[in-house]
Length: 424
Image (cartoon, rainbow, N blue to C red; front, side):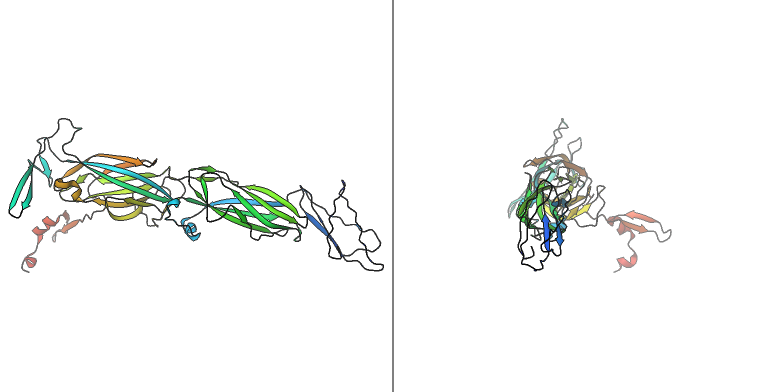
């Protein structure tokens, strides 16, 4: 009103309302602003700059069918850097998937049909071990093998159990809500705007509350406000989420409620399409270590973050990343794209073979055992000695007369020493 007061009126069925403004004689009345609201219509207002005293004044407020507010609820899968920037501890147990398993490798003696043991690639009827019982007493122990008639029962198999864990970061999703006040007038305000996220079982809210104040909390007509949540995917599945909005529409003092839903569901893939690959050398040479590596392959479309492999009873060597064809990939190993494999190399100390550590052995049996409900496949692949992790130098001899290059070994190289070298 012109005097700064408000008056609430209810129209008749035709949308008309009458009211009287009292003023002193010959007093010039000020302006009037009329605000109108009805369910199913967008609030509107009209301003009459001045009133004619003693006359009938008409103010027309036109409203369009529609809503008071509109909202957009969207979801985005977070990258590793975004997760860290949000202050989420990527090493916390509740934020990781953990898969436990055991790898069983069986190495048998390399024997021929005559029962001879292969030592340094040469067959021997027995192997001699020197055992010192005291400073003055040493005994020789002779080891023989008798080949089994049943090929399924190899002689003297050494079984090695390799317990391991693989950890990856769970999936995190940023949920963002944008709410717009559809009123054209800035004076029609949604005050105390809040929103409550409806979270289905299988998703967990991280770093926040379900009910959030929008920013800004008071939304003028034509303006927008927003709020956000972070969700963690704990169980694989497809989830539909929604958010309840509430605010007070002023100057009508009406509570406005709305529910907004995501157009796309949240898909938590987990690691069901992942795969564990174990490559172990199929030949153990005399007194030498056995190299093996464990790979974790991403089989889903989305990236996997922060893979970690821990083989508890082995000696760690190094980690790296390859594509599905085992070609090295130079990008960060903290992020696995679809099809990529994160590898960790280890070795088995010869001491694990006990008194047989100086005898050549061949990988004959291998199995895997998933623990704690792990449901991802484990593939064990025997590989040739030196497939990975070993330096394989190639030495060529160049004939000074013909220039011909011949691949040779360190021992062959002795034959080519010059007299100048021998005289030193």
